[in-house]
Amino acid sequence: MSSHQNINNLIETNLDQMTKLEKSIAQYFISLDNSTTDLSLEAMVQELHVSPSALTRFAKKCGFAGYREFVFAYQSNQRFLKNNFENIHRSLTKRVLVDYNEILGMTNNMVDENKLEEIARLIDQSKRVYFYGIGSSGLVAMETKSRFMRLGVICDAVTDDNNLLWTTNILDESCLVVGLSLSGQTEIVMDSLSKAAHKGVPTVLLTSQAFEHEDYDHTIQVASVRHLNYGNRISPQIPLLIMIDILYAYFLAIDKEKKENIFKHTIV
Image (cartoon, rainbow, N blue to C red; front, top):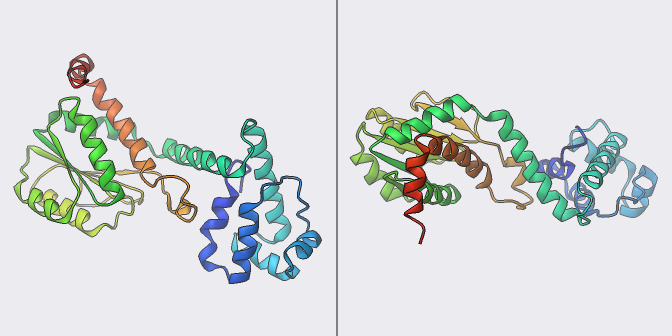
């Protein structure tokens, strides 16, 4: 593990496989705010009232060879946080900012500019665009609809089961459907996308899953937030919104002056 990664996220990722005792050790390190704390095996045995073998088992559950390797990674991470967040003193604040850095870093490695530009042109050329999403992805769909509509796109956000069914039935090849599903397992969204594709409707899926679905014309992978779910520190919508922002920028660049004039008329 490199020093710029958030070791607290690594600990949280592995909580499910830990025993009650190991979880208590995990919580100690997650909550630890003092970078000068003695983390030696002997000191932690006394501090946490656990055996050396319990600390070793905890470290191995986190993916390290032993407790010494875990402490080295933990202290490296603390030095990184101290050096890169000089004006931030509380670990909770630092963790949120590091989570954002990780999401941005992963997004940087996933962006397919040619594919995003192609989808932007599809949006520009389509008679109607529908954004499919349920739950938190539905909130992204509504935000996306609002933004593109202000640039002159005839579009809608479809965010409940009945409307997904009804909308899919009225689609034709002049439409475009953009599905939003972080898990890639939201059954109603995935089924509706497949039905649209079988009708010859152009389809796009934004998901955190790394797969190309044979039914869809385009699959855009976004950063995974699986390892952030335990902490609930940042919104699971963020990875989708970042990719939508990039797509929006490509769309705006197509006949930018015209779109900016349309946008100006929506300002109240």
